[in-house]
Every structure is written in C-alpha cells, then in structure tokens.
Length: 262
Ligand SMILES: C[S@@+](CC[C@H](N)C(=O)[O-])C[C@H]1O[C@@H](n2cnc3c(N)ncnc32)[C@H](O)[C@@H]1O
Image (tube, rainbow, N blue to C red; front, side, top):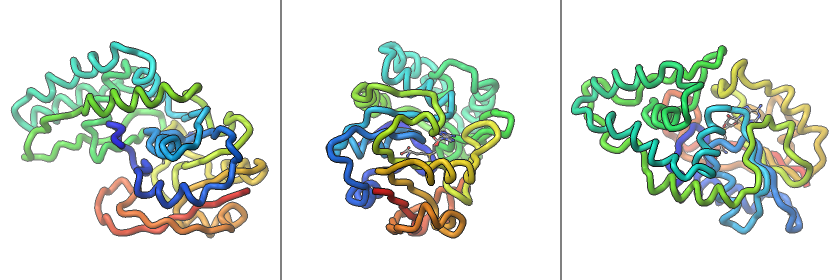
C-alpha cells in the first residue's frame, strides 16, 4: 500500500498488522477514524475488511489535500505543475531556495502547493509553529543531490481513489467523531504536537476518551501509560521500527501502547 504521503507516526501495514488483531470487536459496524493523518492506518483497516465511514483531522491544510485528492479530478495535474519546475532545478541549493519561497504563506495556499512543500520538507514532517505557520526546514541536504521525484503521482492517484470509499472526510476535531467504533492515533505523549495552532491537549483528549463508550482503541507512546493509566490499562505492546520524533535519527525498534475499550 502506497499513499504517496508521509507523516511522523503514519501507520504503515507492518504496524497495522499488529494493531488490527487487537482492535475490539465491532460486530460489522462502521468505524470512525479521527486523527486521520495520511489515512494509512484507516486504509489498512479498510483493506482488512473493516468499514471506515468517518475520517476526521483538525489540520486544515492536510484536510484540504485529502479532499482535493479525493474529489478534484484536476488536482494531480496541478500538483505536477508545481512540482515539475522544482524537480527540473539542477542543484540541491536551487531546490532549497525554491522550497523557502514555496513555503511562504503555504498554510493558506492552494493544496497543490501545500502538498509539494510537505513532500520536500525534512523527513516529510507535518509541523506548524504555535501561530500556525508551517515551519519544517527543507529536506534537501546541503551539497546533496537534487531530488528527482517530489511526488509519486501514481501512489497519490491510488490513494485518492481509495479515499472515495469513505463517505465523510472532514476537517474536524476528534470530539466530533460520531458514535460507534473508533480507532484513534493522536499526537503521542512526548512527541511534537503542533499539527494545529496551540498544539495538542493530551489531558483533554484522555478525559474525553475516558467518558466515551466503547468499542475504541487508542495508540500512543509508552510514555502515555504512566500519565493515563485509566486509558492504557489493557496494554498491548506494539513493536515498530523508527521514531516519531522530528530528529529522524535513531531508527531503533520502539515499543508503543494500544489502549482498548470493548
Ligand atoms: C500521529 S498523526 C496520525 C497518523 C495517521 N494514523 C496515519 O496513519 O497517517 C496525528 C494526527 O492528528 C491530527 N490532530 C492533531 N490534533 C487533532 C485534534 N485535536 N483533533 C483531530 N485531529 C488532530 C494531526 O493533524 C495529525 O494528522
């Protein structure tokens, strides 16, 4: 499965293969997936036969990209129009310069520009300042080779076609998720949380989850277990390679937790 998108904490098939068998029984009911991100987790759920009927995320530029992928047949053509001139630049320095100018005001820019900037960003990170400015530096290394392909149009087209299977893809905070089975993959305790201006309130989220009836499952870092034992009391440890830190270094196996309410 290729989504054509990257994000710290995006859940690829190998980690989802550990999570899927641990999700609570939903008796054929459709799932809500807040914290949708790239959609990788939801897509793995769908491919495993679980129906996803509601996708929500609170990051506005990200949701604009998802909706354009899903609903706008001209979108990928426009993505190519933005990406191609940058790909054609012969040096990494020129690409870095192009990045800085594309990044200026990108939060309100059309989704094609936002997608290209996101793809060129360091480690494909999605991170904003406290005031809502996309603040990731360029991923092209100093003196390194220029990036040939910025976007994988084929993967993006495939992901867009998959997104059309979900009846609702919304710019919405987790608290608007409809009733019923829910899989949540929030910003992890102890990692960067500035996907939205002001960052993420872990305490408020866990208080909300504590009063939400099951079935639900929530992924988080090991660190979350100490702070929110009421949520992560049924611990399933999930092994994954890599890190959700923004450093991009130290890609060691990491254990994370899954809290489950049946
Ligand atoms: C760890 S990522 C999820 C990755 C996703 N599971 C995937 O496979 O790509 C966390 C997501 O939560 C979103 N988010 C942050 N605060 C939120 C909130 N209050 N309500 C809903 N989504 C939020 C971020 O925009 C980000 O896309």
